[in-house]
Length: 176
Image: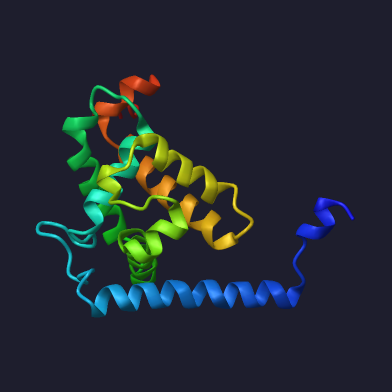
């Protein structure tokens, strides 16, 4: 039997996997909220992102972008841009992003789901890129969706900043 044949899931197994993944995310989000690990209130001067979200997103953004002369100075601005963008999205999107970030902030779920057993701020860029690659290449749709959400939101926020345009040789929008 080939490995491709062995890797296929039946419809029933796929439904069980989806239900299990939903249960894990819901439990992680509820546990984080009820135990005080995660506040539902936005950070000071933010509309959507919470104080616990900022170090995680900052570490992932720095790993994604890599060495860039504008990184240290522009990181807070990029996170504010991300928050502004999220504020203009649906409440359901806010909840989905919060659940994903709760999963990444709680040690009990972060370690098994990402391979990063310590805090994100202490993880090396290689560890973060490794976790993102595992999620990108995962057989589980939930992890692939998490990868897409994180990377697209963070890259969108970063490259929306004029200070980053030189590195991609973007001259800026046309003058009208």
